[in-house]
Length: 139
Image (cartoon, rainbow, N blue to C red; front, side, top):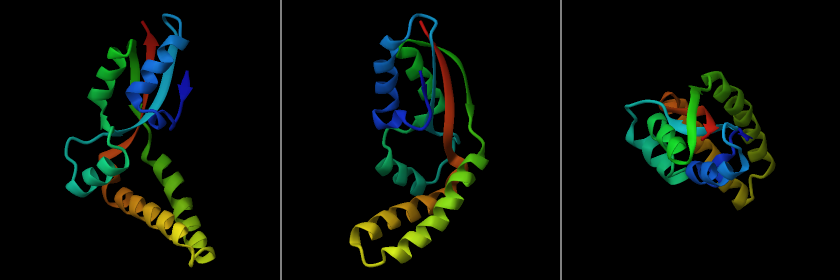
């Protein structure tokens, strides 16, 4: 099973549990999960992610979750910061264009504000969270 940037839709723990029956013993799972990667985080970013993705955990917690869901941890690594830049920099440009095209639309304004808030969090606190690639084997 391979899932990049999508397991959060059902939750890390639920995804691991639901996908376990799809694998034979020894079968592999590879997932990315938004994760706290710093021991020290500022309150504004904690509050932001508590609202946006309350299930966000630390690497250690996610590794324990993998084990309790029936996997042997094969490894993990933090995706490079450039991946975030490659995502957010074009998004920021597109948001400005989208805003000009939909200036009067209240739904568009809500979407724009949400993205701008997330961008601001990343610019200021992006070193405290990131995507972590988790690799496991069904046991």
